[in-house]
Length: 227
Image (cartoon, rainbow, N blue to C red; front, side, top):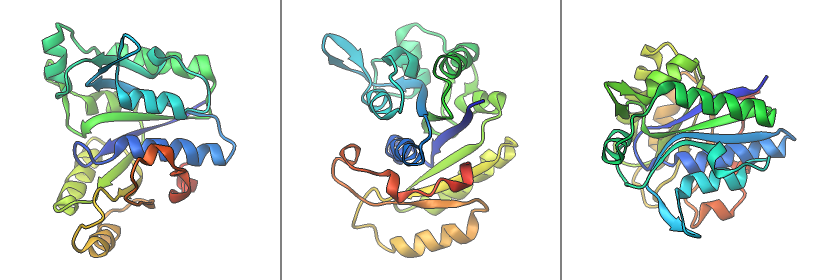
């Protein structure tokens, strides 16, 4: 039975993909078969005459098992926008059962030890018809890993995100800090404050790195709380 975790961010561009790649690498370093799934991806570029989302490609690349692009993502939209807007512009309805079917197929076809499911945007990102992506996470009863994008305001964003996850009766399995900018004022004080406020395992800090997907990010995270 695969362990499954949902990776959310405190905001858009908090570093969910960077953290998910780090989680995949950390799991691989422990000899685990880890793969990733992105239920909804918005924003594609033409690559080899095919519209592809760069985040999905990174998750596909760093998964421990060979996966087809279509196995990694359920809905992939061209527009760089909120999923509900991208879906409406594409004339598509995002259905929760389709998200679940994609995850179920991935579990059955790979036999992975662990699956990291990367969200879109923050916790309460809308997907249309009055639904949030978090409704699906709650339906699947997935423990959550929170990525804190280190920027001014991250304490407020982190605490509010934690409170929303707790309100949805889901466990925060762990959290990590992603250093978006190397010049953030009072970075260490922000980190220490969050350690005192968030009642969940601190998994580590991902430093500011140019082209992070080309580095071993797994060494920055301690995933022992997940195993």
